[in-house]
Amino acid sequence: MHSKNRQLLIPALAATLALAGCGGGGPQMPQQGPPPVTVSAPLVQDVVDWDEFVGVGCTESVDAHGERHLGSVHS
Image (cartoon, rainbow, N blue to C red; front, side):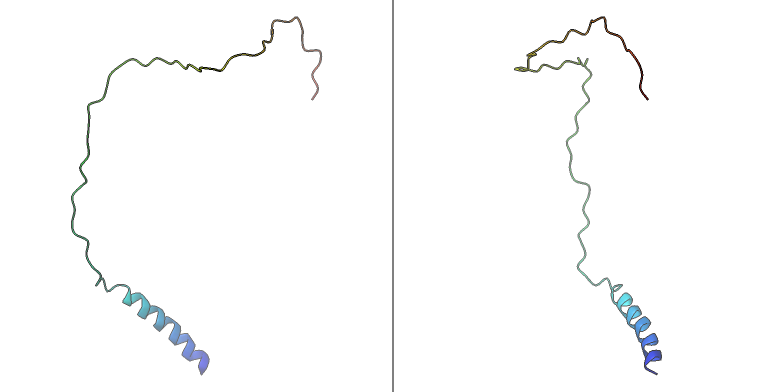
Protein backbone atom coordinates (compact mmCIF):
# COMPACT_ATOMS: atom_id res chain seq x y z
CA MET A 1 0.00 0.00 0.00
CA HIS A 2 2.90 2.38 0.69
CA SER A 3 4.24 1.84 -2.82
CA LYS A 4 0.92 2.86 -4.39
CA ASN A 5 0.74 6.00 -2.21
CA ARG A 6 4.23 7.01 -3.39
CA GLN A 7 3.27 6.44 -7.02
CA LEU A 8 0.39 8.88 -6.61
CA LEU A 9 2.16 11.32 -4.31
CA ILE A 10 5.14 12.07 -6.58
CA PRO A 11 3.11 13.09 -9.70
CA ALA A 12 0.66 15.06 -7.53
CA LEU A 13 3.57 16.92 -5.91
CA ALA A 14 5.18 17.62 -9.30
CA ALA A 15 1.89 18.95 -10.70
CA THR A 16 1.39 21.18 -7.65
CA LEU A 17 4.86 22.67 -8.00
CA ALA A 18 4.42 23.20 -11.74
CA LEU A 19 1.10 24.98 -11.28
CA ALA A 20 2.48 27.10 -8.45
CA GLY A 21 5.14 28.44 -10.86
CA CYS A 22 2.50 29.56 -13.36
CA GLY A 23 0.92 32.13 -11.03
CA GLY A 24 2.71 35.13 -12.58
CA GLY A 25 1.91 37.28 -9.54
CA GLY A 26 5.37 38.87 -9.43
CA PRO A 27 6.10 42.56 -10.11
CA GLN A 28 5.79 43.59 -13.75
CA MET A 29 8.62 45.43 -15.50
CA PRO A 30 7.63 48.80 -16.97
CA GLN A 31 7.44 48.93 -20.76
CA GLN A 32 10.52 50.62 -22.20
CA GLY A 33 11.38 51.65 -25.72
CA PRO A 34 14.71 50.95 -27.38
CA PRO A 35 17.74 52.64 -25.82
CA PRO A 36 19.07 55.79 -27.55
CA VAL A 37 22.08 55.24 -29.80
CA THR A 38 24.46 57.53 -31.68
CA VAL A 39 24.80 56.85 -35.41
CA SER A 40 27.28 58.41 -37.84
CA ALA A 41 27.72 58.25 -41.59
CA PRO A 42 30.37 55.78 -42.83
CA LEU A 43 33.75 57.12 -43.95
CA VAL A 44 34.94 56.46 -47.50
CA GLN A 45 38.73 56.45 -47.72
CA ASP A 46 41.63 54.38 -49.01
CA VAL A 47 43.26 51.95 -46.62
CA VAL A 48 47.02 51.45 -46.79
CA ASP A 49 48.39 48.17 -45.49
CA TRP A 50 51.46 49.22 -43.54
CA ASP A 51 53.00 48.04 -40.29
CA GLU A 52 55.87 49.78 -38.59
CA PHE A 53 57.69 48.07 -35.75
CA VAL A 54 59.92 50.53 -33.97
CA GLY A 55 62.85 49.10 -32.04
CA VAL A 56 62.74 45.66 -33.63
CA GLY A 57 65.77 45.03 -35.77
CA CYS A 58 67.55 42.15 -37.38
CA THR A 59 70.52 41.00 -35.31
CA GLU A 60 71.74 38.33 -37.78
CA SER A 61 71.24 37.69 -41.44
CA VAL A 62 70.92 34.43 -43.33
CA ASP A 63 72.02 33.87 -46.91
CA ALA A 64 69.43 31.61 -48.56
CA HIS A 65 71.02 31.65 -52.04
CA GLY A 66 73.31 28.67 -51.52
CA GLU A 67 73.99 25.91 -54.06
CA ARG A 68 72.65 23.11 -51.87
CA HIS A 69 70.04 20.67 -53.04
CA LEU A 70 67.93 17.92 -51.55
CA GLY A 71 70.02 14.77 -51.48
CA SER A 72 67.31 12.21 -50.72
CA VAL A 73 63.80 11.86 -49.39
CA HIS A 74 63.07 9.68 -46.35
CA SER A 75 59.53 8.56 -45.79
